[in-house]
Length: 420
Image 1 (tube, rainbow, N blue to C red):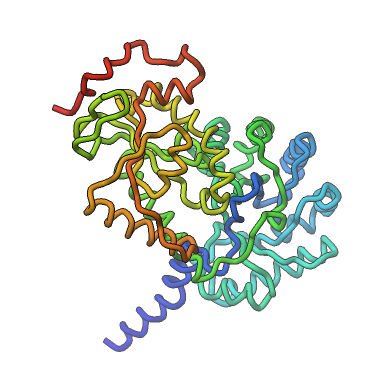
Image 2 (cartoon, rainbow, N blue to C red; image 1 turned 60 degrees about the vertical axis):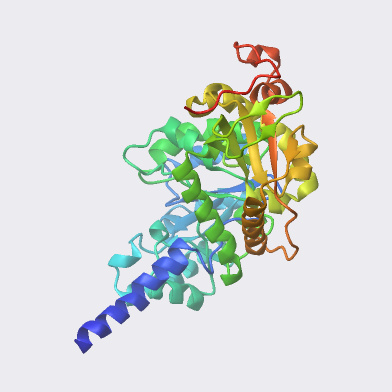
């Protein structure tokens, strides 16, 4: 029994804890920057390869983009001309591995030594210190973590995975996935060599064009604003993001426009309140088909209210498009939000109403939890209902009258249709 207990504790310390705390929660790792500036970092693993890496470098040069390459030591030694080209173009070159082997199937000694060997050998090729290390597959054991510290390098993870390496992926699918998942400050992982290159090479010029059109700056990993290793103080923010994803999955809520960098997330709902009448005398019965939207809290916090207000006017255009194209919200009669941001939403055309005391207390308590998680010490204002009729929202934020629903507005004195 003691042997089994000791074995279980050893496995917990060596693999389970590093997996949960480092590999999953990314404690001690670089994962993303703050979202104040519309820039992101493209990173490429597994190179350099003379058959594929030059095409990646050509695409980046054409787009005027900088990136960071996590290289395998032996390949860097075999192709120093490619490393030199990366550095001359202003890209970052950091260590990926001495041997590209998953940490879980290595001996502890081998996993410990790999970051040291990789950093030393890559540094010898670049002629400059290696400061970052990304282990193969982003996998960690205690030995990997200790090896990074012995080598004096910081672990670098990612916040957006292109999955270009997956056998079911296609170039267009990888391009679409990255476009959907990126956000300011994101670290994107792709591959300039190995299996992932078969998808990355053909799609990269198009992706770079997409990102430029969307206003993103493409910078080295070390140039991201607010980039630093995550600490336990960052855990509440990380956990709240996870809760948002669980909530969104269960409620069919998605970022407006299908873009993770939108300020709003929207999903189908039934209007939750009774006795609400809009300006003009239109009653909104409880149960009316509706679209409920929520705020992208990390983006709001990093931008601040003033910049968020400007972005809201733009991002509501995507929400207006969703009301006309997403089947699950096409039948919505009203658009609403229950939040402490009612004063801001009032400036954007929403009508505001008080909430029942019980609901207001519950929502205010949750708003204060969110503020604590995102580092604010002030108390949230009283939450209120912000609501607008669907047709009014589309008229205000859609692309003109041509995008309006073909069905006429109901007379102002008639109630909107409710659920059966």
